[in-house]
Length: 303
Image (cartoon, rainbow, N blue to C red; front, side, top):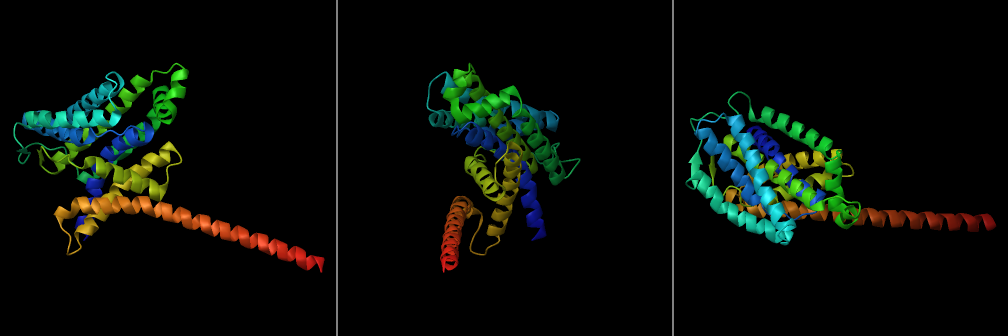
């Protein structure tokens, strides 16, 4: 039990980078980017193939980060310059990346066993925690810069920010590129932790990223950037823990992962709504009781 929970925390910390990338597009930019399913595998493919080729593991991860940024840039260009719908742009790029990733890997599955590894000199949980903190703090600082503020404003009201002379096309491209760079970096780290990569490992990553964001916001809130990014990191860890616990149920196994994910997301979306409804009813009931008590007190005073 303890071993499975430790593994869940380790993978949660690595997936947190991917969740932060999804948070940038879906929450900050309000951009439905489905490139994630492809760019995650792109990062894993680049990180794996370059490591096998003799590149130092950390340099391979950095190259994966750059590769993800290029994929995100292409999606941003399709949307802003090609005037293609944002959702469709992501789908087009995701499809293109499937073939590109297969070209990079050379075959559907590539193993890293026996090769140098990012986690050779430290445990996964230590490296994952350090990276999650660094990326979280870096994003908090970035969103306070002029570019970061422009990016946030573009997501809130692009028409208004354009009226102030801001280049919303550029901020959109930067945001989508940064998002997919983090996703690809997460993919490379996951490949190193699993000692291999395959061309289908990115399928469903967008759902996992959204689940992490939704769970984190539902539990911890997202009133400030600091709190929101922290919620996303913790949400990724909680998602992996819930998933690990669900797989311990006798009548569930690995093939039920998508079903488990769907149920988790439904709960994360429905529970806050139910809680809000209950709180509203309790508040209304309390106010009614206060009004009746006030009327009763006035009537008693009149006698």
